[in-house]
Image (cartoon, rainbow over all chains, first blue to last red; front, side, top):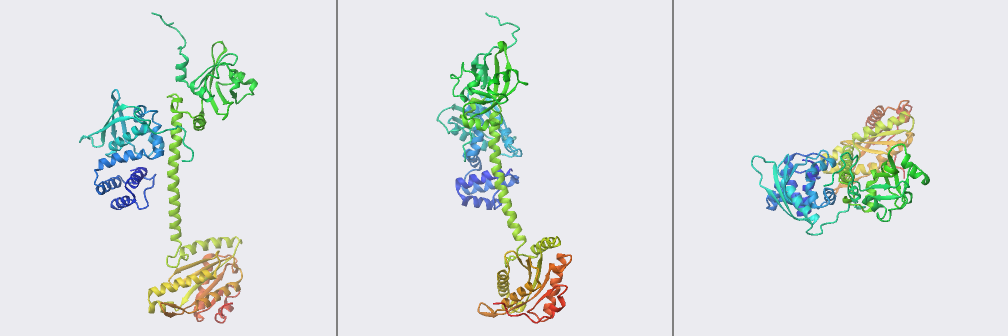
Length: 196
Length: 352
């Protein structure tokens, strides 16, 4: 797994549950003591060992943890800004989701982002197929989509369909956009704020 | 039902639609008056309404032409590519393409080029100010993504550099005393002898062997031995300059690489001073201890070709000469002086 993904998990656990939890998780999963190097690849098994160790200690299902991770990513301002480049409003953002992997690769050519296929199923209703090299991306994406709805100020129902046994690494998310401007949402200026 | 002319050579578009397709278009009349602008270009100039009917050169300059010839440059320029700047501050640069159309009107489509990030900031532009076909937003996205990746990369580099420095220090350091180790001496010796070969500087090697160290180690234990070695390291550091290298090769063998020394007598006095200080009795956990040392010195200035390895070997030979002569001595090996110095009387008391 890309070091940046492991580092995001580390930051998520540290920021959300505190450094002591991360320390336990790091020890239990034999994560490098000095932390992850953002641009180096790591063994996939290590990523899952960290998630399992965290789920065990928090008494929380791994699936729920993955959804929270997706939502946490949106709290990282540089990442939130990059995501907001996807569209002027939430509907526009949703429609550009199948460009997201290409955008991710534009920033980091070696990142192993999941493949996204968008299908419009009716007015304000669409389906997103998330096919990753490893399972779990659908849950991360659903958390991310929920947090982005809040960011844009939209009201949307987001569900992850249970993964079928055959397609273990393909998840289906349905998004039902109820109100595109439910709240004012968070500000986004195209111009990058000076000295962040 | 009205029928369109079947052979119309151009689609007719209302200005509003034209503005959606090309938010930065500029339409000039034959006399250079502004007839219409796209909404984004209007925004840059403080509002489209104030522009209509105004002369082109009241709001724009053409980079390749003086004001008087601006319009002619647009009309008769060598290619259709144009570079303009806004007259109002900040003088945003624009680039674009121009075409002469019917009745001598000029039609321009403009964009920001690489200055897009500054223009977005200066004019408070949003995604809606760009045509969906414009890759400006992708350029901004890439700019931000690249900065974020660079931040990660530079933090990785900083950590790698710190780790490398720590590893290097560790590799060149004797962990017990904090002095340099054999590897550090080899590296410095190679460097110093290369400099000496070029004639740019001189150096001396002083090999130091402790006397009676084994007795302390055997009777008082390893902790006492370690204490003595640390004590010796302190004295050697105190007696040398910052620019000299003080190293422990292992066991009770130490070496000094003294830089810039060309006088055998100066090094011999230093050797004797070190021996005298090492001979001062001290205590370890209440038990009295006394050691001494033998010192063998070789100087680069005594060699026509100052080869580091040879100088090191000669310093070692001088050290054994000192030991054979009865310990507690400093022997300086210099081709002209080796034999007489070897038979010098024992160490003198330290200089006050």
